[in-house]
Length: 367
Image (cartoon, rainbow, N blue to C red; front, side, top):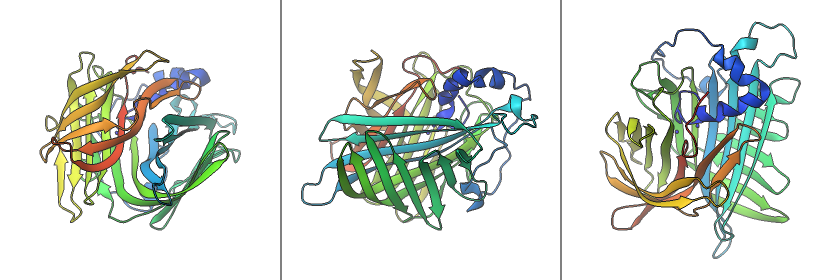
């Protein structure tokens, strides 16, 4: 769901990395009173673009794909672009003032190879190096790009060891999370974000690992969220799932956790292929860990299999590969788990695929 208020409040924790650029001291200087976000009608394509007056924003695409041909190799993929407003520099006239930061993560899960490949970028906006358009989704960070063109999106993220070159076609209407796009994330009204999803994207293109390139096709999920407020003081992290079901429906579920592992806040949604929509609120979602895995590198323990109870159904979420921990300390200062996972019912029957994200397991998220 993804530091700041959107769950995907989720991406707020990633701002810990601003410490390396002086961003934490800038953010700690924020003294404006935290106010509740007003309800507003999201308008597209404008709201696919950046909202630089807000402190944090992210565009996030995850998915699963298979290489063409019989018995095609299976992959998961993730790409996220973040924009962070540095409030202490907003009044500076210099073109060199770091008023906005753009940073990004990319990852490929090679299921058969049992390996997660990931990389990261960070730069201040401007000088043709990094930008996020306010008119429509058009984000650049050096040689990484994400752009919308009508109801299609394209992404190109090359790295030294792997690359994503993918196109995404909308197959369903936009899904407004929360109350028509205003998503509550905590007990205080100010703890909220504007948040929409684009599930069931048809994905195609190529994935490259080292010198080997694969033509792939599959399904993807896009989230876009922007917010102003911080996490509730008692929240140390969150658990989130975004799942494309095989029958065309879409499931979102999240919880913000306290240090005892209790739920500070819960939410999510379910939408049928026919358009029937259920929005989940506080207390509607219950996460129960079924199996845990300990990272051999960081010694952090994560639940990698969950029972997730919602008003629609009880689901089982299982990591396709246990080791999908991402170390982003060189860009955002954080270590978290995010990876391809399978969704089943209580009897083990597959329902779909998607991504599970877990933060705050190594240490509490703090600005």
